[in-house]
Image 1 (spheres, rainbow, N blue to C red):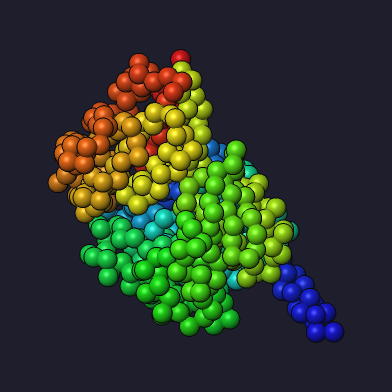
Image 2: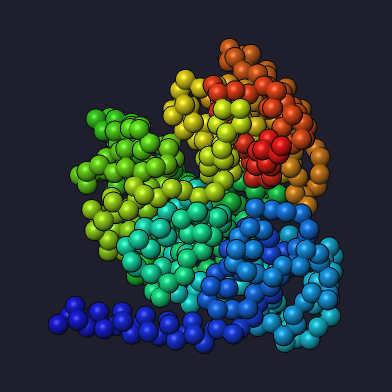
Length: 492
């Protein structure tokens, strides 16, 4: 009898959510700076929910152009006050723009209070939608895109009808979003500029905390504080899933008043000290053919198509959350083995002159180490060439010494000139300085590695055309547009 009551309550909630979504149809939204990753995923989500969506941005082609085109979202490739649909129910803008550098925001400032009230930054607008659901936030310094896509994929395959927003295109989603009839809403959420303040989560997946965004956070304590404040807002009936091997995550967990679930990875179970302190512990990691295999506590063996220790951590986060949401172990095992990952995360782009070309978004020292460790474990007999595009002057300067020691698992390193952000002061550090410091560090540690600064994507492409062959694996690494190296290699 009790179960029937719960089933009826869930059924009513589903029907209410369907009715709410139906009422939102025929609404319209306009996006200023729509090609940004977060902006694109949110625009695509609203479009799938029946909204009429349009937006504007600069003419330059980004990876998100394809997603927007596939979603049939109208994009003006130039900012102009004539683009604006003033009758929109919602006007969303990227914080890369303001009234001083964007003619559309300048025009909106002149409008009445009614338009001002419906004009808001991306994170605030997303938070308003997220908070209407049983929101599950995926956050932390690294791995958010993979984890949010991975969890969304598992719940979708388990027929739980989730709503999912991911900060990259997911081939198995045919876009960056999923829409469903349930009240579950999984969103990749961003700590930068304290955007987390707009979200009131039911559940939080906290992957790791590793100081970043020095242009906004003055120090590590300032950075950690944002996560501490965030977990205090988790619903009392909700949960926090976190990396139990991350000391900063453990500090943050002390502030949580809800259920806390921990996971970790060890090399050898016999030496494990964490088995009593974490709920899910992975061990016996192996590469078997095209799968990475590992065991978890007494739950048996799991297989995933993603390589590297960091992806085992990502999988544990998904396993723990899926179990918390009621999925059976055997179902989870079957589903996670078929997840293929997202674009720009160890993504195989193709070959040139029989050399394998891989694209990866790593732009922080910790991410670089994880990516190169994964590649070196899979391609042990290959010559790994890393083309790194440093992202922002502020990050390069603040984490300079960490960048210097991040590339030990590559055989050759090419560093492009820094990809600066429009929001920061340019200069103060250079890629050539980074190259010289890496050479000194390698000499001190007797590491044999070719290291050079090649300034532009065009020149890197010319260099690779002449120098790569079948024994090479080339990884294009960075948060900017380093993937264009492959496009130029492919041009006939």
